[in-house]
Length: 189
Image (cartoon, rainbow, N blue to C red; front, side, top):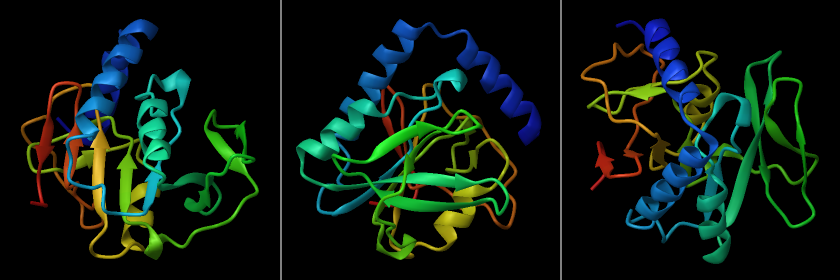
């Protein structure tokens, strides 16, 4: 199945999930995240979920990061340039829902992509090699291409992998995918 077909399939699969199921599955994902050897890092980038798209609720992972006194960075998107800015999440950071339904920081301290050590990524689908299908705008591939070569990438998914997804030259594969049941390791040991 091509990427567009996978996008549609996984949007439909998510649409079938109740709010209670999303919360339970998201908590399971957060518990799995605790088992990944990533806790030496300082700068963690995490997406804030788009409720209307039934994304993984990252609030649980966010609480873990804050409890471990990590520096948390959240994205702000620019749909004109298809780029993201990376803003340090602080106690006084104002989060507002954008015109695209994305919770985003208003103002704040920008952190360069090269400083970010761990990135939690939203995704619709992924395969057994760590190739990821997002919404198709390329925000995360552009962002990851600006990060250090040592950045750790972690996809969060309610579902298991597809057998194979055709990757494009600009696609950056994941190091891990965390589901409610398991953590799949692709590129890091």
